[in-house]
Length: 211
Image (cartoon, rainbow, N blue to C red; front, side, top):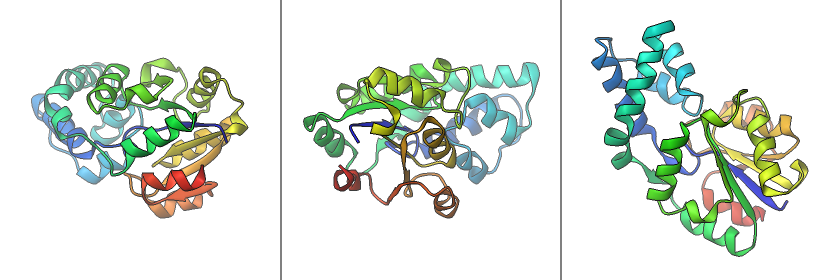
């Protein structure tokens, strides 16, 4: 393997508190009831519109308004509550020194994704960053992984996709990549293992053993 395609939420960064706080604030602002935190976390990484539709039952104009409000609120509420998981920065630096190509493929809005990667000090290690707006077919479709593979200049079978959700594993597999499930993130470890990824890790630093 010569390159990595990385999820962001729950894989590189612990964004759970910020996402939950922003979503609950957005729903209150619209006069709606708060939703169960576990339901939000279980869907983290999916496109924002899908999460709001599923957890709050929104459709049409209210859904579009909620998406707009969430994005307006996110930076002020969530950025200060977002941090890299242990060993992420050092592992990305290690892979960069080893000339391992790296890209991020996330369901997060592109503007917030780029801003957070810069704020967290790891954007310099990445060759490409893809957010929700960059693909028509979202995870678990293979489109984001295939786009990232092209940008990295490697065939899919030379790439490892790392993510904490079943749709990260499914995306990588459908794209023809090797897959690695991050069991420390937002996803259910048992569900992730049932997807039969090529590797599992309990700490991001374990990627140095794979490479």
